[in-house]
Length: 213
Length: 213
Image (tube, rainbow over the protein chains, first blue to last red):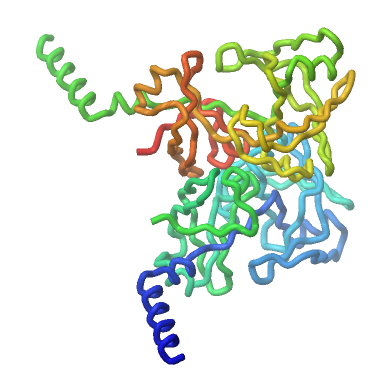
């Protein structure tokens, strides 16, 4: 059996040197977001009542983030969209991330921006069971990004804020440019796109992608 | 003035040799399709009544093709989608081209295929004002393709059926692979994608794209 063990060890070493295992290590899970809302505690209370607390429905991949039981109607000058999911926990400022297709339904042109980059974004109206909020800003289409730990960033040879290109295989494959690296100590490795971006490349939540060379 | 004419001629020659004018010539207009239906005359008559003829609402870019006034409801085991536009003229076989997102609403998994490649596709139910048709096949998500004349194909150095990669610039840019060239004597130059594919890359009907090098 000694010979076979030696052979196995040699094969494994050859595979490692060939970079096959490393390549496999560098695949990135995909997280797909539909339109959703982040609320400040003040706006949450206007919409749902004084002292209201969000109800967690499901944990998301990023630590501490969760989908809530609560939904809202969002409305623009041309139309409204019902049952838009709220994600928790509450944030310092309210923000609504929509799909490109929603701009047409709502009658508002939203810019492609990183989550949290609210200056210069248009507003939108939120309608809840106990009241409405007219946001002066906070409507955006999320720019594609990859969450990762600082350890991941080191492994991939990238830095926080850097923009990379990612490669998607298959009949509906291609590449997405200007994908922003968001690296910090609390994030878990995940490529974040919205449903239109996922569908255009035939990606599912079980898909894995890789950085383009 | 002779000197300026000579200078202008030399500049133009330099620009041409640098490929700038050629590159500009090789931009391709974008045509964006939402979900839509092509009907056979027999199915049209089942849905709208004996002897019915389609009503043209708007000419499309490809010669002889048009959007119709008529719409239908399409239905699967999980749900229905109303007001799906019919495109004319009638075809030999009925066909329904949907978005990836529609598969979820309908509860049917449709394959990515070229228009007209119906063997192996699932069916769907069409509901019209005078009757319904249960299609045994014909549901697909259209594979990205570029219509062009044989003259265009020669200019681009491509052939009918070849698959190319196209390049999209901008913040939401990237590339789409496996884009099929559909070249014949009756087609007009146009890159055809659906609304999800257009939105994912921030393309509008006024956009132009180019083949990747």
